[in-house]
Image (cartoon, rainbow, N blue to C red; front, side):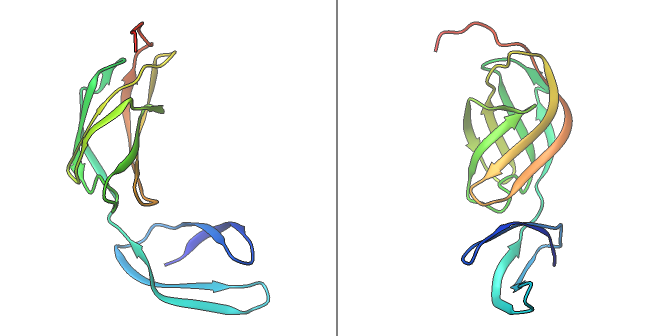
Length: 142
């Protein structure tokens, strides 16, 4: 399993993005530009990639309840921190399991088509390219 590149590093922290891989766990090995090598066993786990099978409805506006069904929707985590519908953060996450997520859409200042993105309580992310559309924000007292 390889990482794509080092995003940032210091004497105590290395930040990188994982390349895709099969589910499983293994060691993390860092190799410094000096040639020094540090390894920790069983420190990394690839989790199953989430798959969003259906979205209903596939378009809406402020306060639309949206249900997404699929597999591994928690991206290896215990819950979701956020859901974006066509790059607009959902107002609320009503429920979230590994097979179904229900959110209430927030509004947007423009009509948009885009992707769904889940941010899990781990560093995992699931997404789906889809023709999900959001309509312009309607007036609503909050």
